Image 1 (cartoon, rainbow, N blue to C red):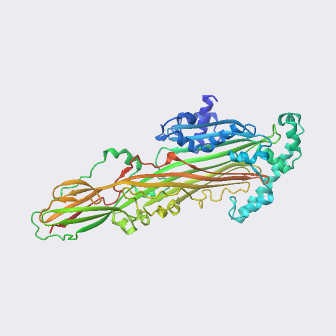
Image 2 (image 1 turned 45 degrees about the horizontal axis):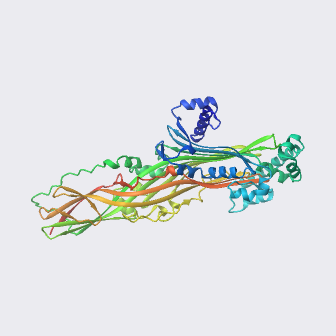
Amino acid sequence: MTSKLLKQAALASVSLCLGLSSGINQAQASAHQTSPEVNVLRKFNANQIKGKINISGYELNPNSIKLLNRSLRRKIQSIKGLNNLATLKSANSEVLELNKGLIIQSKLSYSLKPGACATYKSKLSRAGIQCGSKEDLKSSIASLSRRGSPNYISNTNKRRFAIKNLENSQLEILKETKKARAALEDPEVISTLGAATVKRLKKMSDEDLAVEVLNTADQVIEETVFIPKAESFKNLRKVGTLQGNSLRNITKNLSKQKITKLPKYKIPKKIANPAPVDRSSTKEDIFLTGFTFGKQYEWRKKWTKSVKWCWTGCKRTYYVEPYATFGYGLGLRFPVKANLSFNSDGTRAKVTPTFTPINANSRQYRQTGMRQNQVFNGQELVAEMSARAGLKMKLPFVGRKSMSRGYDRDLTDNLPAPFRNGHFTPPSPGRPLPAAAPVFLRDIDLLGGAADYGVAYAKLHPGIKMDLNSNSLQFKLKDNVRNRIYAVSSGQTRDLGIQNNRSSVTLFNPKYNLGFRITPGVQYNVGVDFAVWGKSWRDEIWIPQLSITLPPGGADFSCHANTQCSRTYSFQAS
């Protein structure tokens, strides 16, 4: 392919992902090339990336690309190893760097030879190449009414509509099959397929012949992932109000954290009317650390089948293409209970702070100074998802269809332990939380049943993987009498100055070191059913470039915005 064509292909992919016209032409491509909105900066062959490479601010390596293209690579190797059953026409995987983000795309084109599915279906399946299966109208209609079926439709009116589509689809497919049967008398077809193959095909019923034609069609599989550069809280209601420290700002300032300057504490020499002093040997308060983070990505996958109903001509092209734009927003709040134990014999004073991460309730969140509209029922994890999912298709009888649906959801309702419902106890230093099992929210269909056409169905389920650990938890402690500042960890004792029989300390600037990773994904369940021939695709994809991964050794999270970040305590020395 020439560089000019490669550039046009790249721009076409960009237009698809960024919501531009899918039918891009050369003039439009030129316009997009010069547009500040979409600009392809660099393009890489994914197979030529041998080491780590930074593209659009994301670190890519061969393993992460393999993960995204795992099914493509497996199919390529399988087709090459089964050249007596399948023909590989083209395969490529590319990484595009844009001014707005990053695109990873793959495309595979192949076809199966006549008789391959009929005789070697199991062998092909083990190699990762799925044949379509023979269907009949009665069973296809029954599956629409059977709970648990992937294409089950609960709404009666929608089910009637889908059944009508199935009936008409079967009629159209069988009508096309008559062309295939008539073409078996054509000398050119006999020469192309071989006399033995033609003889076998002539003996088939119309239904079996339709399955054979559809299974030997030219097939194209395309998959595209778009990852924008910018963090975004668009359409995320809870996360947008938190206004915590964004991950970008935290990592940017890790090496140059500033110590909060506190006003010098003065104790008057004489106290005419002493203010009430807490004579308790302990004092307890709640501090809150944390951050807010948001990211978006887009995914789409397209299966195209070009069917030659006359074996060498009469080509019809069908396709299904599900897609989704996801916005993930995370608000992580780590409540810490600070307990100060004071001891004094009248001449010497000491304080021993103890810091304990806790699963705080709503009342304790309010004690930190957080506004009521940000408490969110005391959730440590505020996780939201905003999505727009859709399906494009061109299929027998129904023709071209396109639909899309917006969606937003609080993800914490479905998270596994230890993050269930967004309530969890943050990890203490050296004691990581148990790793949460990967979870797909299968009760959430991003398409909401809107893609149930009978002849086609598509369900998209969001997924999430999480783990969290801590290396340290420290505060700054100021001895207000001596005007000294210390970094203190839990259980560490500090001597204090005494003046006028009192000691005073200010506890401030919590620094909670955490190693945190969350990886988003999507599971798709897509199928077509022509009431003669059917095929389904089900898989999952994780997006490693979207993992919110803190630097090695974790990152230090400071006091959460809009909360009380310092407190002063006064103690009676005797």
